[in-house]
Image (cartoon, rainbow, N blue to C red; front, side, top):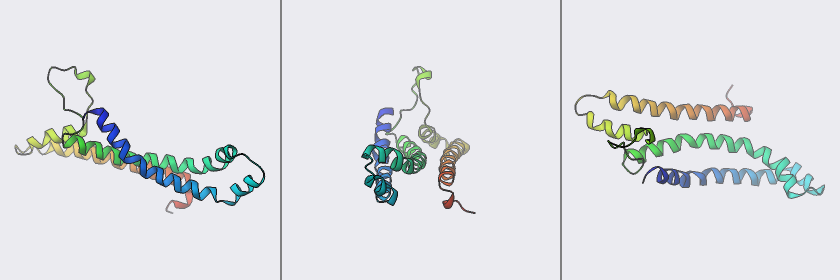
Length: 153
């Protein structure tokens, strides 16, 4: 529970997918002809990793990292909405140390839906969707930038 629990939970559940993709890319690049030629020329494994494998993997890693943000944001919001994540603000505490969480805002707005104040849930929900779509667009743009052949014409 709390900020540390959310960070640890989201980090532990999201890194394996990216690690699996990066491992697959590394295994594919290691079998490339230019890596084999570098080995035959007597280049060290560190040289091959730095000058042949790492430049091929970096764009994939960056795009994958940016595309993990929407999932992490949605998971944090859902965990907090259910009450397991960040705690809501408590009266009497120093408000400057509190971290705003969209899940808390959505959770607290549910009690106002009965009174007809639907906009208290709609606008935070739209903000959450907007942030997720923004990160998805940034990730797609980075993917198109790093791999122009994957971009639509």
